[in-house]
Image 1 (cartoon, rainbow, N blue to C red):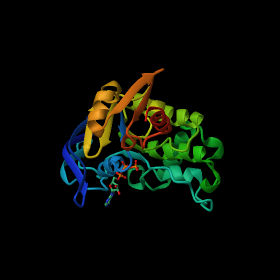
Image 2 (spheres, protein in one colour):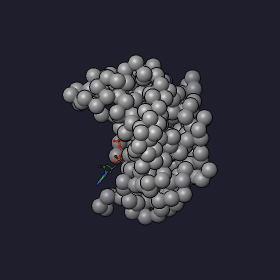
Image 3 (cartoon, rainbow, N blue to C red):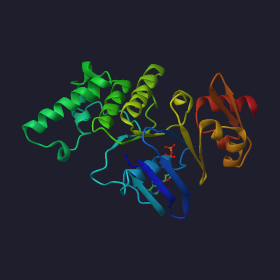
Image 4 (cartoon, rainbow, N blue to C red):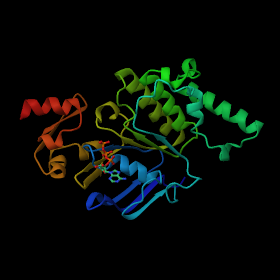
Amino acid sequence: MSTPVEIRGAALGFGDRTLWSALDLDVAPGEFLAVLGPNGSGKTSLLRVLLGLQPLTAGRARVAGEPPGGANRRVGYIPQQRSADQGLTLRGTDLVGLGLDGHRWGTGLLGLRRRRRLVASAVEAVGATSYAASPIGRLSGGELQRLRVAQALVGEPELLLCDEPLASLDLTHQRIVSELIDQRRRTAGTAVLFVTHEINPILAYVDRVLYLVNGQFRVGKPDEVMNSATLTELYGTRVEVIKVGGQFHVAGAQSALCEDEVHHHESERVS
Ligand SMILES: Nc1ncnc2c1ncn2[C@@H]1O[C@H](COP(=O)(O)OP(=O)(O)OP(=O)(O)O)[C@@H](O)[C@H]1O
């Protein structure tokens, strides 16, 4: 299996602003990489680079050995959640089917049957069979998100890009969605890049963290990145990280704290 993601000497900027530079990153088959950082640090832009939607300013990126965006590359994508238009009449199964490209599965009768079978099994895998025939405008956020996971997985991706897939989900659905993603990478060797503002709900699955801040970044195991010395250096201001009950709590200057409720809570206590 080729390396799902290879990034060498990469930089991305808009105008005179550099989001990140000198980024070298390999993501191995089955690896779960959490991508963390404050608003605007370039997390979504990194996913867009790997989708072939955003050219790098410098350096190069390869997805399974080829330039991003190639037709042969199997990349699943769970975009940042936006609530579905109430009027949307697209059915759940149609949404999941959008994750299959007609070219690869064929368009004849056999192709259609095969597509239907693949969609049904992807829907079943996320436990969405009972509501998959409903128009998506009528589904709850959690139901819709499970269908989005099915859409991202139905094409059997080698690389899964997830952009805050747990946002606005309750704890039960956060667990269901993150377990589905974890199961995929364990059983099929799919590499996962998981953009999030909150590492704790997925900590059990995370192999490494890429933390982006103000044009700087650190990559390493969670304990190597999520500690006071590393985040203080990265943010350029005093940041305290404590690990309690297997969860990280981060407190520091306001600039470092646009991340999650725990952080805000901690900042009130410390400042
Ligand atoms: N095509 C573009 N042209 C100009 N600026 C852009 C473009 N795409 C993104 N940006 C800017 O780059 C910065 C990083 O955006 P990005 O969406 O990657 O951040 P992010 O880390 O995912 O943020 P958030 O946590 O808020 O989702 C933002 O300031 C954004 O406005």
